[in-house]
Structure formats: structure tokens, C-alpha cells
Length: 431
Image (cartoon, rainbow, N blue to C red; front, side, top):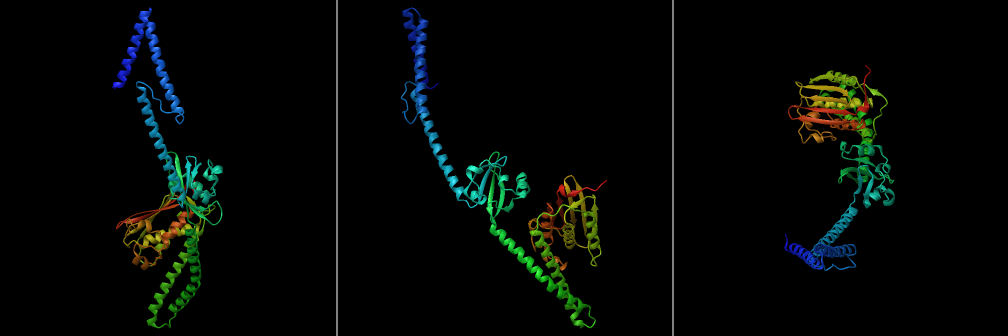
């Protein structure tokens, strides 16, 4: 026990003993001891009163002096209070610095609770979304950003990295929205102005589409004349091989122009319609027959159609998905290998799988194979007539059908391309 508490205990016992002695002399030792104890209690209550008054009105009263052990108690409380005040100042200064830094950020930030209600936002978010502090705090973010794609993203943020949408404040401003965790039961909606990038992308698509459209007519004329020259029996023998090469390259350019036009259409389009069911199994069979009818020696194509379910979407785009995946697999697979095309459907959706035993794709190339004109083996792709746009077309066509394209591969073993379609686009066949 500390010395000052021992001294307080000894003093209290001595006071009670003295009261008992005085009470004994006056005829009742118990009454004397009780009076002494009550006096000691009253003294302690007064010290507590001084402490409470000082805590409640610290600015108007100085720290009480106290007696006995109480000066130590007052000093300890005063020290704790001073430390808490200092920490409060540092905390308020830190809050001011954080607010100043967030206000200086060019990206907007909106703090949301678990129900997507707005708790706070910075100046950039106020400008990008047209928010008002008194009016919009506590409002659900879906009621301010009324976009179906954004609402779907809020329900399942893990399905994609973010979403781009037009700013609700009006004008031609485009925003990139991304939801990240922000403390217990909260999330932070990060907003970035991507208007410049969207405009550049729009200009690029328009340029590619216009240039491809303008190139189609002259290429058709050139290819027609080359066909005529190649079939002319009077053509000099020394010109037959150059004309055949020019004819082949003109055909390749026509395929490239057609792929560019199709890709531009897919990039600028919205979701594919969901009115007409498409028999994807029939398309798979048709594409496999087209491959088998080619004159060149190709790998064996096997079919595994385990479902007669149909797919709601655009028949031309679905055929393009199947055709490009199969063409890509055949192009990178030796004649001794094989290509397997599988279609299945269940409660989780539909799956179109194209697996080959070809050269495979390295791990660093897999994220890039769906880029335009990206080839893992440019020599073989050009030799087989590839344009470098097939997988890019597949990726954008899958997006229009609310699906995902996943790729697994191993060098020297082969690759597997899986197209996963959502359940709402699957129509099960009648039993």
C-alpha cells in the first residue's frame, strides 16, 4: 500500500479512536466513534464536491488544494485532463488536415453506410454530382445516381472494378465510379472525371468505323479485278503468282475491315436484346462443319453438347463468338492435335467452352490476348489469315450479352476459353 494511503488510514482510525475516547468520557464511546466517523465522511464528501465542481466548471475555478490524500487525486485528475485536452487538440488538427487534403483531391469521394446512405463527401464529389450538404446527407446514393448499371454494381461491387456513367449533374461529363471499403459498415465511393478519355475513345471508334467503311468499297473493287485477272486464261504465267498473292492479301484486308466494323459496332452498342432465343447448339454444329470443310489439314474438332438450352441474344454476335473462338483454337493447334467445343447449361447459367491442345499462352500474355491486334505468335496468326481482332470481338460481344470470358492456358499443353452467360439469358428446352 502506498505511504499516503497508509497515512490516511492511520489518520482515520486515530480520529475514530479519539472520538471513542471522548465519547467514553462523556458516557458513550460508540456515539463518540460514530460522530468522529461521520465527521471524517463529511470531510471526504466536501473534497468530492470540490472535485466535481472543478470538473464541471474548470475554467472558472482553479484546481482545489485539498488535504491529506486529495491533493494527489486532484493533481492526477488535472494531469489526465490536460493530456486529454492535448490529445483533443491534436485530433482536431488532424481532422482539419484530413479535410483539407480531401478537399484538395481532384477525385470525388462519398462516404456511404451499409444502406448506401450518404454520410459525407468532399468538394470534388459535390461538384461532380451536384450534391448539397444539408439536402443530400442521409439520402441513398441510388436516388441521386439513377443508372441501372450503377445500381447493379452497388449490389455486387466484386463483380467488376468499377462502372462508367454520365454525371447526373448534366452536361457531357462522364464519371468512373468505384466502391472501396471504408471502416466498419461503411464504404467509399470514389469518383473520377474520365470525360477526356471517353471523348478520345469515341473519336477513335468513329475514326476506325469511318475509315473501315471507306476502305470497304475500294477493296471490293480491287478484289473483283484481281479475281478477274486470276481467272483470265490469257494472263502471262509470270504474273499468276503475284496476282494470287495480291488476291490473298486483298482478301485478308477485307476480313480486317469487316472485323474492325464489327468491333466498332460492338463497342458502341448497348446490351444485346433478350427477345429471341438462339439455338447455340445448332450454331456450334454449323461452325464445326465449316471448319471440317476447309481444304487445309486442320486439327480434329470434337463436340460436347450436353444441353438443348437456348440463349437470349443476338444470333449474329453469338455466331461470331463461336466462330472466332474456334478459328483462334484451330489457328494455334497443330494438325495432330484436337479442338473440343462444349455447350452446357444449368441453374448457374450457360457455358460455352473451346479447349485446344495447341501451343498455349504464357501467364503474362493471358491478360492481353483480348486486346486489339495483340498476338502471342504473330507469324502463325498471319500465316493462317488472322486479323488480331477475334478475341477482342469475343470480349465485347460477351459484355453485350452480360457474360464473361475467362482464359486458362499452359505453354505446350493448350488453352481453354470459357464463355459464362448469366441465368437470365438461358431458356431451357421443353422436356
